[in-house]
Image 1 (cartoon, rainbow, N blue to C red):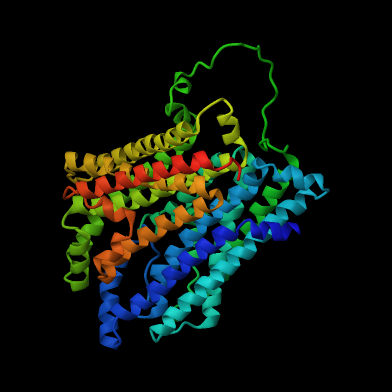
Image 2 (cartoon, rainbow, N blue to C red):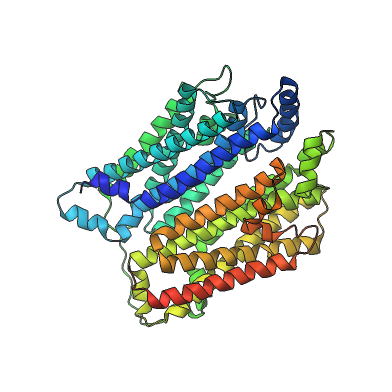
Length: 541
C-alpha cells in the first residue's frame, strides 16, 4: 500500500463524520431559507431587511451580510461563513496528527526504516489530507446545491466551485499551520493547543475588523479575512484572485517550512533544542506538590495548555462583552417582527440576557471543543503506548477513567473561571449590570455540560478510540447548530432538545435544575460505560 493511500485511509473516519455534518448543515440552511424568505419580491425584500439588521450585529461570528434576499447571498453569509470554521477545526486536528500523531504511535520510524525519505513521507501526508478535504467540500457543496434546488433556487455550478476552492485553500492553510507547529513541540497535545490559540487569534483579528474596529493592514494576516474577500456566489461577486493567491502561497510556504523542519529535527524531538547542560543527579522526588495528588497531577501536567485556553477565551469574552451594548441597542430599536420573535424565543430582554445567550452559548461550544481535544489526547495515549505505561505503574483502569474525567472537569473550571471573570469585569466597565448570583450560577452550570461530554467521550474512547474524536465533535457541532437554528427558523422544540446544550437552559434568567440533573446523569452514565468497556477491552486495540 502506498504512502498516499495510507495517508488517505488515516482520515477516513473523520472524513465521513465531517462530510455528513457539513452536508446536513448545507441542506438545512438551503431548505430553511426557502421556507422563511418567501417567494415574492416584496416578501424577499422584507426578509432581507430583517435579517440584515440581525446579521450586522453578528459580525463577531459570521461574515458581513450581502444580498440576503437571494439563496446565494443567504448561504454565503449563514452557511459558508460557518462551515469554514468546522473545516478549520478538522484541519487543525489533522495537521497535528500528521505532524506528531503518527510519530508518537511509532509509525514514522517504521516507514523511514523502509527507505522512504522524510520529504516524501510528509508530502504524502499533505497530499492525503488535501484529497480528503477536497472530497468533503465537494460533497458538501453538492448536497447544499440539492437543497437550493429543492428551494427552487439552484446555485450556479461555476461560482459554487470557486466558493469551494476558497474554502479548500483556507482549510489547507490551517492544516499547514498545525503541521508546522507540530514540528516545534514534542507532543501532539501541545501542538493542538498552540495551533488552536493561533487560529483563534487570527479569527478574532478578522472578527474585530468586521465589527468596525480599525486594525489597519494587520487584518491581511488573518486567513479568514482573505477567505471572506471572495464572494463568487453573489451578483457581481467574484473570486478575489489576489487574496486567494496570497492564502495559497502562505499555505505552501507553511508546508515547505514544515517539511524543512521535519527533515532537520530528530524523531521524537522538537525543532529547536537548547544547548546540552550538565546537571547533577539527584535521587529525590519532584518538588511539585501537585504531582503527588490524584487528579491535580494530571491538571498540573497540562498547565500550559490550560492557561493558553483560559487566556484565549478571556480575550474572546472581553471582546464579545465590549460590543454588547451597541448590538442590543441597534437590535432593540428596530421594529421588525422577525427580530422580536427571535428575541422572545432566544430569551433576550436586556443587556444581561444578551450576555447570557450570546456569551454562554459560545462558551458551551468552545468548552465542548476543549473536551474533544482532551478526548483526542486520551485516544492518543491508548494508541501510542502511554496508557500501557500508566497501567504498569501499577494504576488500576477504573482509577484512570475517573481521574481523566475529573481532571477535565477541573481544567474546564479553571478556563470558565478566567473567561467569566473577563466577562464580568468588561461588563462592569461598560456599564452593564450583571446579577452576580445568576452570573456565578450560569458559569458553574457550564461544568455539567463539560462532564456530560467527558463521560460520553471516555465511553467512546474505551469502545472505539479512532471514532471517539469525530463522533464527539459531531455531537458538539450538530447540537450547537440545532440550538441556533431552532429559534431563528421557529422549528419545533424537539429539534433544539436533541442538543445537550438545551439542557443547560437559560440560567441567567431562570433555574433549570432538571436539565442540570440530566446532564450530570448523562455524565455518570458515560463514566459507568467507560469503566465497563475499559475493563473489557485490550489496550491499544
